[in-house]
Length: 63
Image (cartoon, rainbow, N blue to C red; front, side, top):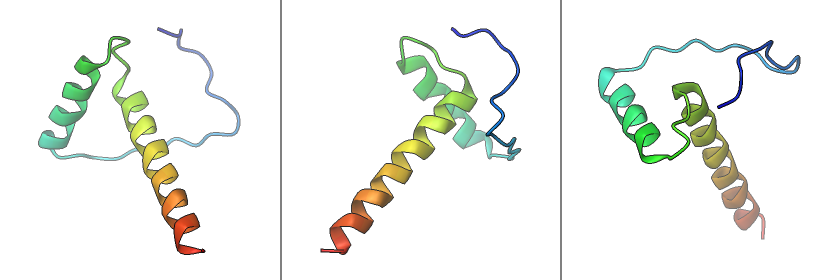
């Protein structure tokens, strides 16, 4: 696991409250990954996948 340090300059903190059911789902996803990423990292990965899906959908609709 990476050491904690100063966050990259080109980022912005986002604080969000989630229902316990969603947090439990995040924790389940963390345990399935051999790297055991942080909750924050799981959320980043989900957002990246969602954004990639939107881009693919937008590209398909442009044809």
